[in-house]
Image (tube, rainbow, N blue to C red; front, side, top):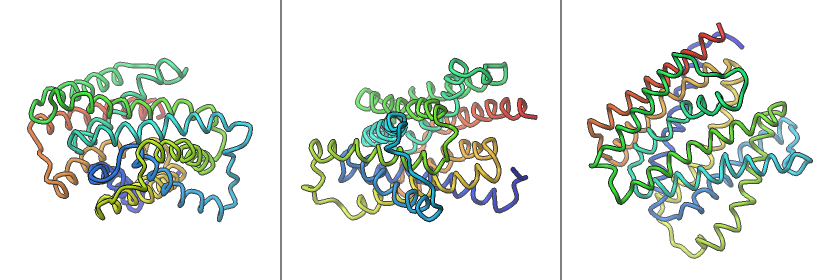
Length: 295
């Protein structure tokens, strides 16, 4: 690991922008494609840059090795389920809400880590962070202008999608000794295998006549927000470590809210801003506790 320089901060900002841009692009993709098809196209196009990197770096892909069941399980929980749930939810709620709801992942992971790991227990700082962050989410659900009885379940499904990421992360610990590129390539392969028949038989995407903007968005989601973003994440992790890379959590909901306004003119209410601040403050306290533990 090395001390981050200006280029490292620039790359971290780019990663945050790429991941934040996924939310308004998911919204645009839902204009033409169903949630299963969006999930399928994301993993299909996302696998391309990852598998090409593995090929040129001569990294063995172990998708069909003796650990195939772990790759398949993680592929379903960490890719298939959240990609579907987020796309399904965003169809009925604003994409900026999805960005805020999904930013709770660090808070959820802290709770899960307390129960399923030995060295990640709660302390006062983490507890304060979790309470502040989730208070912001509860407050967001009280915004009747954006969340009502018609899309309440959709918002909950997005939250469930963020929880799937956390569970998938815990399961990944089972194969933590394998190269990141191998793991990502393998779970992308299994996610594609799982989603292919579902998309073909349930949504029949070959029979639709999609809008051009929806097609561009779904390709972008795969190649950039999934494939290239994961590779950029690897670079930051290797050079600067997990604590530095985790700072992206603060930026995603902020950038997601800004981008949704720029590209979709989505409404930003006072409750959205208060919830956004609360979530970012909550993440700050959780990350602060992790940093203090390391030093």
